[in-house]
Length: 506
Ligand SMILES: [Zn+2]
Image (cartoon, rainbow, N blue to C red; front, side, top):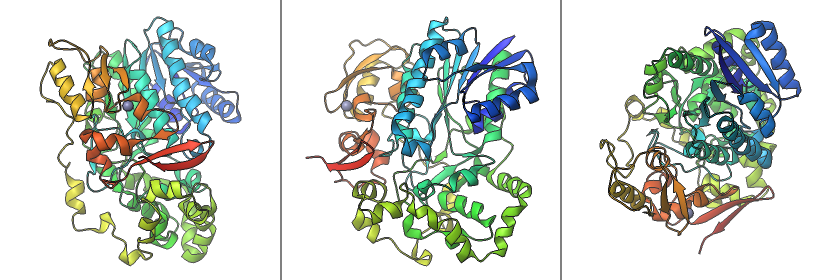
């Protein structure tokens, strides 16, 4: 009997993953569930639908003993649990405790129980930070420039680094993109988060159902011994060509179910212009080729969604102006909404998300004057094929990398590789590095060259974001950071007791 331990099983992707995993023969799924309303509800559902195929461990991944009980005798651990936005934007410590602390507990528990469970870590596209039309396409290995004040993205980047550097015998990191699921509208119509999405951000979606199928197919392939070369790598999960859009198109699709265009519901100048995440993946077909999990594009998802929820159609009977007063206008008063920051003088957030109040004041107030990427002449061409890949600072075709290659890659990141010698180095043995500020750290060549990680002190100090300063010295980071940040921006963004601060560095 193969035991597959799963965290986050009561979440959107977790429920789908369990549903698909139990279809594999000779498999038992072991879920870690908290003693909460949601946890109990999931347990009842699993019992009813899958009987003995699912066993539950009651506990919390912030508690190491609970993680030990989950991992004991497990063959796989699928780590899906995370505090995500919008909750992550309001509960910073809880987010770090679960996302980073929980992951560290699980890593330790797997190693402690014999280091035999294969660790599948679900990371996120948020680790990459902001993208726009200047580099709409990206891939694993691109710089991780998590957005300022994004505690979710930062804690997940730290969690991923912990997995890569852990000494786990067998792991894979899957960076999950934006997920379309049953309650996607309901869950996002309660917070100012929806205004964080820039109109022109390239987004590649995936559905929760396809993501669940991916995990089940991955395990099945591995059990059959056909997942060669899969482990100890990082991947992007995405829905492919049929799931590539812009932020505007996404809102437009969702709000058309209620009988209007996004233009009827939103003010063009009240969605952020930067400091978000998402892009089109030039490498997400890799997982599809291996595990054949895609069944739904964005359009198919919304069609199915609308067919099940005919009441949304009733929206068409209500004038758009009234719907707007009922649906989107109240959200502007959310503390997580740009309209709130602008009104209450939260200049730090206005700086991070718009480039400052002056930049915001220059934004057009009318849709007719707002440039939408999805309406531009260039759009189909841009979306049709990947733009030239970003430079990762070393020869990607070279089979055996040497310390000279490490030195070159470090210099491209504004720092140095301090390890000595000239023989080829493996990708998974830690080396010693120094960043432009003189911080010394250990990291594997895989994490730095292949996965886009860099100095933990500069990039992963909790609640501090100093990418303006990193990009000033690192051409590697600058190649995307400067797409949305001016050459002379030198801000350090900090969350202090929940208050956003932006200080100009001298
Ligand atoms: Zn540093």
